[in-house]
Length: 437
Ligand SMILES: Nc1ncnc2c1ncn2[C@@H]1O[C@H](COP(=O)(O)OP(=O)(O)OP(=O)(O)O)[C@@H](O)[C@H]1O
Ligand SMILES: [Mg+2]
Image (cartoon, rainbow, N blue to C red; front, side):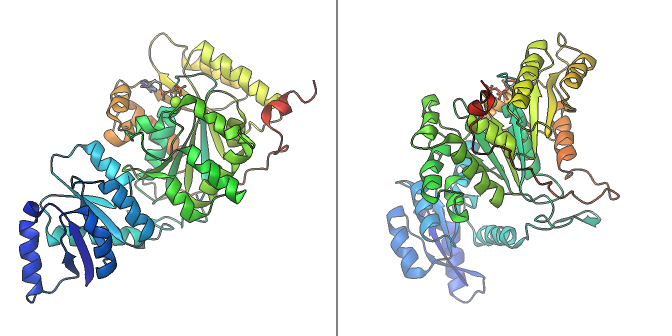
């Protein structure tokens, strides 16, 4: 029988206490409530005394349940940790709790059956081989040999065209696809103004990419997997996040006593090793970190709105990259906010793309629901099953990694293609660009 500790306000323990009493006097069950403290302070000593395998903490107990959750996940990583909350708890709070290490949030009043069910669900998730998943009438091939470590960067030299919208929704689409379980990490590499955390409704107290700096410096290379799990933020959207710094000037810390490109390379290598899919939201400046990501990515989606300024900015940037011998062959154009009325028609935009030898991979329509989703902190693919943007975004995701749809005849998932090593890996971008001058 699994020993369980429930830290909850005494008045809410009526049902559970009765059930636990009935169980103690003869019932059979897979779990055993060994302690019901009503204060957080007692939890650590009780854990040690009872060897609890499951701990449930009420989110509104006096003190800091989140700090206690972090302590437990750090000190007893094998413990299954759940939160319990009132039925009217705000969804942001529930999401935040999940992001901080709680496996799930149970809603009051607690019962043995609900706890048992949550444990079974968590154990099933842990047991489920990431490698294979069956859906409908066919079984997909195992993940590691197929899609493992696919890295997709999302870039635009122009601001405000929808990079973050595409990157975030793509990450969620892969993480919650109907056919194969994929671990997905979304990296906000917009080091100056990144807002992935805002778009996902995450609070300002989360770890950011700045927390990686001492770690990659210490290991002088990728960070070990167990450390990675402390440095990413687990969100309630099935996507882990590496958030950008919250203060714009903080990105300069990447350049202190070391090279920005090397540090970013090590961070991305750590994530590439540990996740099936890594999505990177890039900033518009062609800084060293941007170039490293483009060179490491299997695909770079270059987002543009269908207007002359945005497309010309891409034209100039792609030319610059070619001049600096950056491989742009894996870049594809994504036209976003199509159909607003006054913009270039698709044929003209496609003709410009042709001129710069940048194949068009997708057209994503203007969707009035987009801004509302951003304001709600819930990306549109999570909030809605259908809609013009959601449908087109899923098609784009499927074109890159075929995980949507039920076509039985389709070929197995493609093996992730190797990315050729960057030719002048160690030379920062600007030096490469001006090397002959
Ligand atoms: N397909 C779309 N339909 C409607 N609105 C959209 C669409 N794509 C993006 N937007 C809107 O455009 C704005 C900018 O989007 P987003 O923040 O994703 O751009 P960005 O390129 O990441 O900007 P930044 O350069 O600031 O990082 C947002 O307000 C978003 O609501
Ligand atoms: Mg952005």
